[in-house]
Image (cartoon, rainbow, N blue to C red; front, side):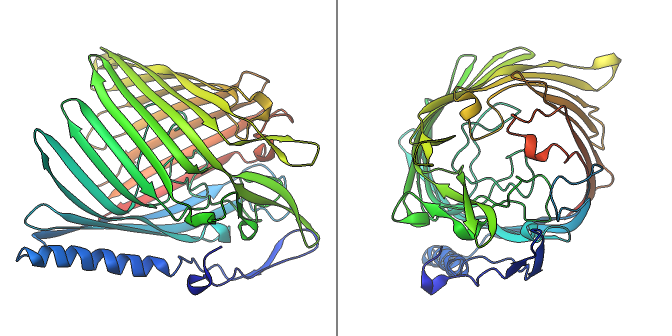
Length: 447
């Protein structure tokens, strides 16, 4: 998928007749453009700093080393899948700032997984130069490099958040992001903030491999990726967003024009195997995120209208149909403070997720209800409990979730999560993972 001059080594993989993976070299690979880009970024920063007669005013280091274990109590739905998985993840951040306030942030990420080689991967989460200044009474800011951007207000699903690709192998909740190369300009004042984005090098969505759980019946083969644009992953994407506060309302209006972050998975024969080939079309998305704050009650809305995208229905030529559609997540949260005459806070969530394509939707959120409760003890250990349910309003399918978080010491943090799938209907998009209820334990060391 990369130009020949910067091509990564081809994946080495073999399959047995029953579909199980054979030999594989699970070496994480970033294209050769990344070290070149990082070198150019640091050189630009040093040149700017030295031009003013200075060097970084200070340098800060921080990071997280995480051990992770997964257990899937139900028997696997597909050959080759494993009941246990574990691994390590390392994420570090280096922050350098000069005397004029210009800075560079570098955040590399590396994961090794013993259960699924596709989860062994590396990424640059952040690597950007930040500079800023004044324009009259307003301020401007420019970020140049690899960055992560988060839009939206709801709890269940980041609907309008489209700038960064999601890192599905990290977690199926679509909230972990891959770094995206971009130029990000912001103009802000008392009237709000106006942001402009120029992006290239589209990031492919990550997917579990043959041994991985929480996957589709057929494995997604990223070697068969295709694009609607002749420029493929180097198509130049654009986005903009206005955000501001108007009395009790917080409003965000966004526009994205470029390569879709959510691919269509096309059934394709690869040798004697049926696999899914990801195809990325060109889309335009109009987005709205809004929040109304009234004391302890927050009312929230995220809505999009997307043109140029495919749905999950095949036409007479066995191609997926193109369909413009709208989707929204509407709901709110209410906070009970000092419950039971203690320092604890209880937050209740309720959200409705709707996609007007219905069963033609390419995701699992076509018509669902999300309910959750989060109890924070507000103690020195930051202890937190979360219970949630995501239920389909079209059939009997529902997913129960539970989480426990607690800081053990100044450096160690424990996160336990369980998710169970119940009465998953065969017509439900989530049906392929019906046997993938899991228990996940994370122990993090922060430095």
